[in-house]
Length: 283
Image (cartoon, rainbow, N blue to C red; front, side, top):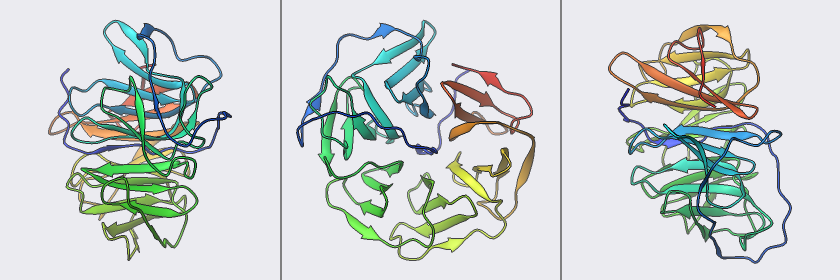
């Protein structure tokens, strides 16, 4: 099944796990050739998203990046704790988190990027300063939360902004004009200036939020159920089954009638196209 990608892909996740490493304040990490692998037991999925270029499943974890193809699951690049992970529409990967012991990346990573599909990572900014657990990109715009809400037009120069509640996850609309923040109790909405945040009054108490397309928003609610809005948040449809232990959420439109939702849970990835009534284990 070929997937149609109409939304910016961004990471939304819960939790915080760090790798300790003594590293320099800047640098790039390279890695040996990719090898077939399973996600190691005891690690954590921090993000599971579809690459908008070709629909490849990308899995960002406590022990680096994995890709799934017809040949199975493959480890890509160095061992890096990818706490925040997002893919821009031009195919650039952005991330944050902590370095592995065999890299010369800073601790914490700050904002890093990969232009070679995750084989190598380079520091863009805030190396040694920021660990963005919530991270979203649209074009060259970046929004992240590392204990403070920060916005950058180019990933290099940052502005620190106020937000009424701490965000668990952040999501850009596909055109980059709107940013959503899930807080565990509500979904906040702002324009890209991020000066004013307005609660989406009809939305459920949302732990995680993601766009599937310009009008379709998916949230994971406190009770573990998925909810979907097809009118930009005005009205919502609730799933019938709770999904236990989900820690990350992404969504993309497969066709005009179907939305795929990916959920990271433990060291696995679940896919659903019916708001959790049925799920398929992809990893």
